[in-house]
Image (cartoon, rainbow, N blue to C red; front, side, top):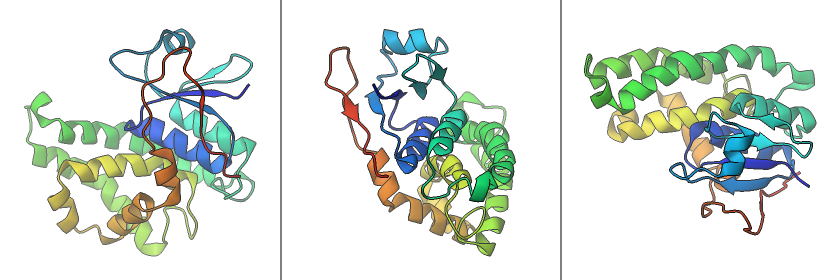
Length: 216
């Protein structure tokens, strides 16, 4: 019996988990979740009720996207997203923490400014740009965040930059982030992204299993 992944197609956390699982080639059963009607089996596995949730064959549960990425790539890493002997993990981890805390908070305020009327949308965007400038600097020196090849850092951060860029596409298209836009386009046009963004109906008990493609 393969692991089961409860996911939501557009969620950036679930997206990065799917990217790592796809890259690893680990076979999983994918269950698309309707957020307004979450399956009881998912809530039993992870009462916090957010995706992604990975339920392993032995019944153990991983319900943090970064941990799912590491689990998958430690099992099999044919594209060396972790670097040689896992050398990218120590470098990627602080970037992921920055993305998931400070930048994600700025992104939420920028995306939903009506919920945070104490400041303007432009103010929240300016705060988010601190992280964008760091990424842009890295990508001017190399095609990917940690060097010449795609890594776990790129896959872990990409879904959130995609979300940021979609808030105001015209602004982002003309902002001084040429290298970041190039990096984003590479991801958006990639086979990996196409593979993990296929549309599926919400899962219900008794449905035929949907298996994520095992590319390795």
